[in-house]
Image 1: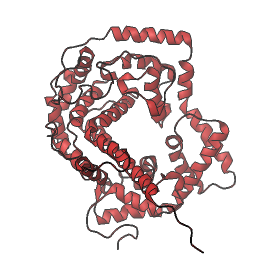
Image 2 (image 1 turned 180 degrees about the vertical axis):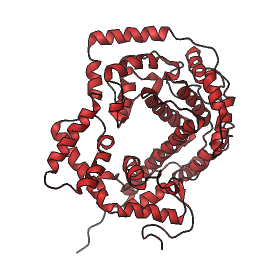
Image 3 (image 1 turned 90 degrees about the vertical axis):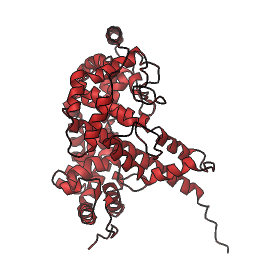
Length: 453
């Protein structure tokens, strides 16, 4: 019998949609884990629902992007059966945030740091009860101790010393002057071969190993230092650096003293502080990172290395990502000759089925002016240049792996990152469209008129 919160259709449904529908059926209990529209937060799905409730590793039938009716009912049931523990998790999270403010703790993202801890507390204790304040304080102190001083505040204090800053600036200048530039990048034909194999499920891609051995990532990075290599992506309308810098060639990194998530520059244009700021902000297991002085020491060399990365497998993944990015075609225009591999067909097919993309596609061909003053048109414009958001997010993810010495050993692992970034960008765009539509809908509702006597 179909689940009461899921439609009884025989069609395969996106797993994300099943999760969204089941979550909304829980009511207001887990509100602290939800967004303004009532859907689960992205981190709720990533840190709680998938790893702790759905557990795709143990239930591989629920790991797919699209589920049949039986699998959708199973997933829905898992979430509904967890209603009590999810509500308790939300209440613990609210308490931890309140205690965090009282203790004056500002380091890190509370969702990243506490979501899984709150789920553990909910599983062990249920909802917060007598003595919960003491437990919350102990958890917060444990998280702070586990970070081992690997915080943005510690980074800021480390780089505040004038003598240290002068020494780091001299080291950056020496490393930058010691670079070796080459006039042209390596042929990206092997990248297309890898993407063709990756897009075909289970296919091997020995060309990935060949690219790593030949240093194709390093060649591209050095070519970007020399000058813009012409037509490296077979797209004259896209800059060879793919928006990873706002300059003709990447500038020499500076030390920096501050950073803001809302105003971070392009990856190659970031200061030492900004590069490490993103790593510390995003890390959920900071104890696995080097200490702040060691992070800074390594980042001096890394920021002056080809593509801003040390590991060659990660650099090659930038090349693969660039080849994939220039062939992204969410609007289905068919104008890109680069999007001809199996990987492109997988990613573009998924994107073109998005309802938000279909709305944007209609806007691109509509002769009528944008009625909302440009909000939706700006979102549609993002789909005309999808490579920009894709490459920025890909580089950040690879940089985080490089800091943790987490290389990509084969094509399959590289494809996992490439495809994961594509999904992340798509879901982010979907959320922005939904937010814009909710805002426009609320603004269009007429004010309720008072009843006449």
